[in-house]
Image 1 (cartoon, rainbow, N blue to C red):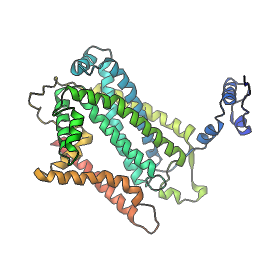
Image 2: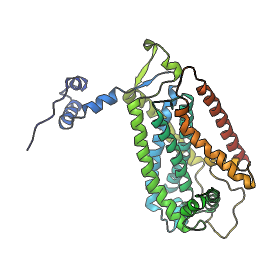
Image 3: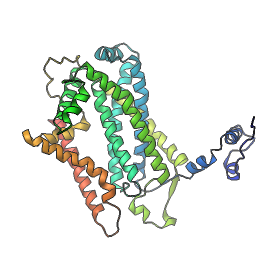
Image 4: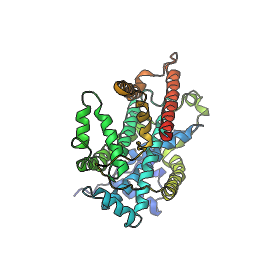
Length: 370
């Protein structure tokens, strides 16, 4: 048997706690068995630029924290949820299972806050020009993550099988059906038939608890890999400073420790929101009944929903085509704005982003008030 142990590099030996301490013995035993010092050294060298916009860097960590809350509460809800008896099982979670209503409300509010955080993260990244080369992959994977998380929310909305969820999803899938070429196929694939039914529950459940989590986890890993390899982006004003005036913080000590109070605050906010505005459960869905008055999608889908109202009748396809150009333009940003010194495209993109943000907020507020 080979009992040879790996030699610990001198730089690792100098960075470790004293050899006679308990932690020092543990780290030395670990490094002798698993030569991971180059990996540790790589992470120890990661730094975060320190400037007046540094707080925006925390949004990525907040989104990851909320996603972990989603995973934990989602697993707890799966213990009692039955796709064959969706409304009855959710009603049991709310009424009978200890802390079931609280866990369900935390799951609901963490989903909403995660989507909001990702929206803010995307816009902060855009305004700081962090999408520019060589960070095209980071930008594109981040945008796809936002899209998948939004789909996460939509797929989970139907699972309680109450009136509000049923008719909202029916309207959402019917809008999908209007898309040219593949619209009917995509809608039938989502519904599992000509209309939303118990067959749809099975498909949305599989999408919500298996397919989307695996895709999101894979993309998070890829996104974080890109960030670690390329480092945290620096705004133009910071990058232009002389080297002696630039300040940095270590990522895996100072910056992450600074994020812990923010995560604790977010957890406290989740508890407060869940207690003050618990997630309700409407009466069980009746496919033959009338839709409740004032039914509308969740807030993060209100903007496109309201925008389509500006294109009535046959013009609806024109509205869908215009909105379809938005995601393509977002993905193309790194290839349009390449930070050429004599180019004004960066300023134009910032102005367009501000106009888009104002339009999104305006449509969302209109949807909430209408």
